[in-house]
Structures are given as C-alpha cells and as structure tokens.
Length: 283
Ligand code: PAF
Image (tube, rainbow, N blue to C red):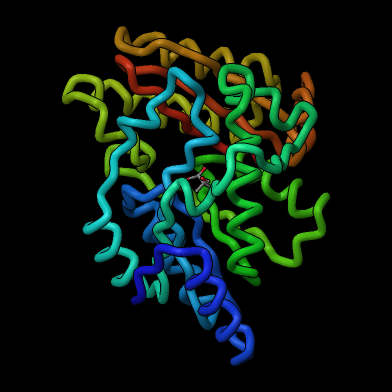
C-alpha cells in the first residue's frame, strides 16, 4: 500500500490506474479507523480492481464549537488497518493540500435533506461534507464510493449530490457495524468514559425495540419515536438532541401511518460526546 500526501501524486496514480483499465473504489474517511471502516475497505477491495482510502479530518464540516482539534488521529494504526483490508493507496493530505486558498468553491445540497436531523444543530456540516467529497470524487474518479449506514443522513445527502451533479459513480452504503453489546462503532466512542460507554448501549436497545414493534405491525410514526425517546430517557446520563423519523430517501416529513420506508434516527449526548444511530423501517 502506498501512502500518498499530495494531490499531484494522487492524480498521477489515478491516471495510470485508469489507463490500465482498472476500476477504482474510494473509501472516504476521517481516519481513526475502526471495524466499521474496515468493512467499507473490504467491500471496496472485493468489488474493484484498485482501492483508495482517504484519511483526512475535514475542517470545513466542523462548526466553531465542535471537536475538530480533539478529533482522534491514529495514522500508524490507520495505515496498518487499511493495508490489511486491501487498500492500494492511503491518501493523507494536509488541510492546505485540500484547501489551497481561502477563497473557494462550495458544494451545497439544499432542502430538507440537509436541514433536518443533524443539519439543525450542525448548519454548515453537510456543505463541508459535500465539498470535500466532491473534491475526493474529482481527484480519484471512482467507479464506486463507500459510506456507512451509521451516517444515514450523510449517505442520502451524498446520493442526492451524485444525482444532481451527474457524478459518474455508484454510492454503496454498507451496514452499521456494532460492538457486541450493540453500540454502533464510531471514532467518537473513544471520548466516552466507562460509565458513559455503558449508558450509551441504550441507543441500540431503544432502536431495536422500535424495529421489533414495527415488525410486529406498529405503523404509528409518533408512537414509534415516543417509544425510543422514552426508553433513552430511562438512562440518566443521556441528553437527547433528537429522536426523529423521516421518509426515505429524501428525508421528507414522516407519514403519520407508515406505508413507505422510513429512517428512525437518534442523536444523543453522553457527557460531552454526541452519538448518532438509526434503524431503517422497511415496509
Ligand atoms: O463520514 C466521514 O468520515 C466524513 O464525513 C467524510 C465522508 C469522510 C467526509 O469528510
């Protein structure tokens, strides 16, 4: 596996790879790789001739009071894991390399899809994600790009961007990978202390309960969200940002009585750590 730090070197590699007629799989990450990322890299390796993993803590998707400086950086471990999972290139650019000038072009997906859920408390987040992912798509020209279902809203926003901007690639969304007790794998889990870590299991428990109720025939969207919120509130360390339900794929307001696929998503703080999780209610 090659460690690449500059845009110019990456472009040269991509040019050669395309010339050789190879398909390219891209796994965009912010590093601090865990089993969730490993599953994306493994899938990219299985489905493409050449796999590029980007490892870049993207400053433009963090708000002024968010955890940009504290975000875990584990480059040595990331190299080992990416290589083990079959990556051919690990692209680790500096902020200056990705954003050479202060005046710049933004890519912004507008509408409810970026305003609801995380968009409400993180108003610039999806513009930063869409912009950096567009740059990565243009640099790597992938046939397929891999994202995790844990960031369900991000995946829908990026699908919409790909459709609207005619990016010639397929977005592959891979299932959430969980710890044995159900907690969704996240780079931010390392912020949790032992008590918070134990408490955070309530998220997957509550979502699993709602999914089971849905499978048993409960179709009232308000009852399903109330069930999840109520269960999360039984955990004294939890501080709910949202427990909400929206129609897939565009995150339009939920139907009162569910007849199409919906996303039931939560964002909850434990101490200073904000975690997200979700389930898809498939009809
Ligand atoms: O999901 C992430 O880790 C980031 O939002 C992404 C897609 C790598 C863009 O910085």
